[in-house]
Image (tube, rainbow over all chains, first blue to last red; front, side):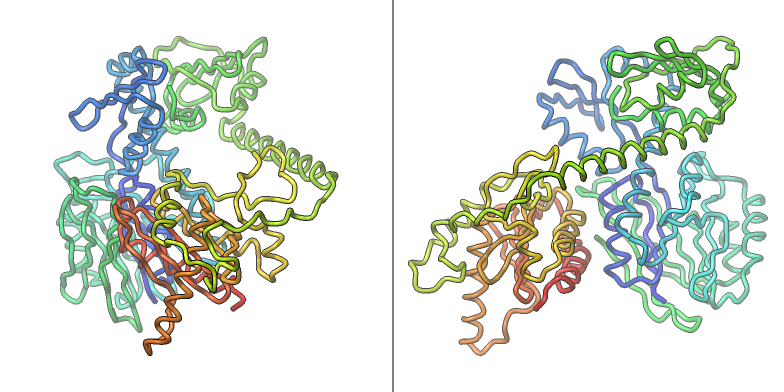
Length: 286
Length: 310
């Protein structure tokens, strides 16, 4: 069985498209997309005239003087996973003083993009394609979770054990404590208890795949205790990823996107499992 | 506020149990939606109130709206569940779309069918059958350069010119593309041909500057994105000459594809397959070669092999 896993696309639609293409092109029997799935910021395109806009972005102010140039800039923003909103100067000022409204719009844009992805996945994967599982990351708002529960081609796998071709795959988006106070983080004791309960459904560890993105004492203890055949985990922002062994468990971590990457890039790993052993694996970049 | 949909906003309000008022406007109408702890409790719209007003507003296409988080107590006039209301609106929209599709199909079948027009004359500089031969040989690179210069940036799958225009569709520009009917007459699947180009478009996005799937017999393009008939004719000659040269040089014939780097950031990729050839012009500044070669191309070639009778 060939499993193609990618992670950390952070709102980038080009990366999501590549993921869908890669699952088929690499001949994977199953695709797994792990978080973070959502982008990090909303950019304001402030309309200053009939065909002019001011766009504050990454510490610079872009003066845009045509709809074509605006489309190009907002396309760039979207491709890199972020979101944009066209506003009047009054709306912009109003939003600056109303953080709860900013958050409402941000979350709405996040859901809007995931909904677009669901449609895209249904179109691109078709009815006969391999199963594709998806789970958010520890930095993703929970408002996206229910979107995967409606029976489309993207199958939810977070906080559950799913059966794939004789293997059991356990996934959790939860993380231990971090310096960023992420949405899904919890103290190590609680995380350990949660993962213990989740992994208690695992039969033969030789036929178990563990998707635990975040690293913490709890996840290390779980890996040590259950010794699954393979574990997929994330790498820190800008990290190179790679493969390592924890006892008999092969831990695979695709490279994380670099902030300075000029173009959005999909990092993944294709693993071939056979008879309860890892036959081969290759890290991919597209 | 543009770039955000009303339905996304109200779903978040509902999920997060927020209290707020929304003022929406569309086509000269305006209305209000009032949420308390995530529940839609009241609505007003042009003489309507309660559930009727809510259905009216939620059915508007792409309304403008403002959200106010300052709110006052409000009596509940709507008992229906918001999710059910949104599903009902989606169902009504689907029905409307199906109805308009049925009407369009009925109009289409009522229109007199004409034979597809004869293809316009071949591109002047290309040879008569697109395969070179005895005629004077054109300056291929100059032709190619001129043809590529015309490539637009935002590609759309071109409606292969229909014998009669589909309703609501702008007339196709004059090209040497053949109607799908011609492909079908040649024993090809029109849907299969379109799928090949659609896969390239999906995979490459705005990096795809142009694409043509054309007949090796006469250079006729069956389907394309920013279709360039001159490029088809020229590439047809290049492929033919390469095969001849390889044969003379004792080399195996061309494999599944060949590429040429163009000045700037362009890449010409040609995939001959049986009686068909696919030519893609790609902006390599917008797509990584790894993606093109390892992800998109295998998918496109597989679809091309499926559709090619050869």
